[in-house]
Image 1: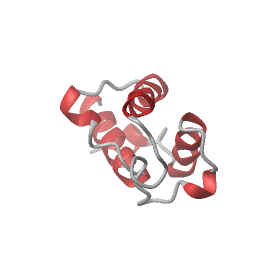
Image 2 (image 1 turned 45 degrees about the vertical axis):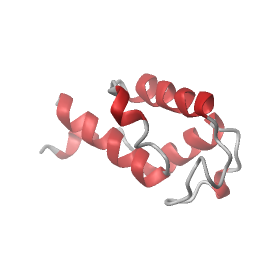
Image 3 (image 1 turned 90 degrees about the vertical axis):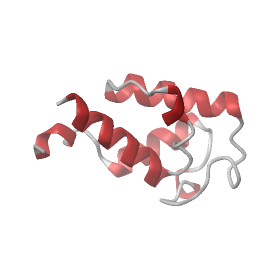
Length: 87
């Protein structure tokens, strides 16, 4: 797996993007903070998160993958995997 396939994926930029999307303070978006349980993200906002990730990183989520994006860590791993698949 080529390292440059995920060169555009930076964890701190992703943290900032997620915080902006869910209207949370960036310090509240820790690696394992559950967006739904801890930050009160509802299903509509969760869908918006997926759409923003798709547009920003040029990936496409399958419906089953959408529910995987509940923390910064899980968002990072799903986007990373999708970026590797397309390279």
